[in-house]
Length: 269
Image (cartoon, rainbow, N blue to C red; front, side, top):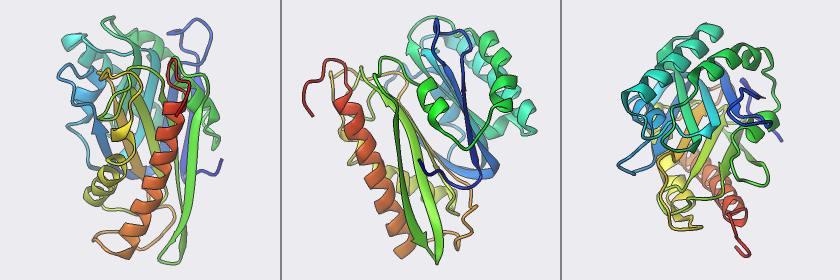
């Protein structure tokens, strides 16, 4: 799969699951514009309570995603665990904790074993590559397959790539669904407009997704754009914004259909 310039990925087994990879790291080599859309569930998980106050942002470096534990209904301890993980990732990357976001998926109401994730960070950072497949595997829960997609387009005469990894299978209802999607692009983008593009793309795609009618505590869709394509920065509405949004909408629609077709008990799309 084609991935944007300046992004690296890793997946590892931290011990939240018996065998499979269960923690993923997505890193931008330079600070990236970031936007996010999250569950509207009143019982939003700790990573969402933390992240939604810090995007849109002009300077995110990394997103760590774990599966096997949702860090939901965990109160102040859950937020403290998120802070510990963010600080550990930031230290390993030479970044600040404010430049790190997290997301979680898995069992609800059980404290996140943050120590296991902290211990896995050196291996994650040491295994970062341009191959997203290990990260895509690490975020899965009851999914039967990884979910990846990409789009390419030209903006201002520069080749731009958008790619994403996603997961989702059960607790799928409108307003995202139990899903996590991490979208990366090498486009140069103002954070506020990236947020606008993401919302325009999610409305006809992930927000229309239903498998079982249950709204999750952990729905997360994060987009990062690091400017490595060196296109003229998208700082106003116009043709480049429209072209990027159309490509992003197409990508999100493909992933939404992939999630629906892999839904728990699904027999048709």
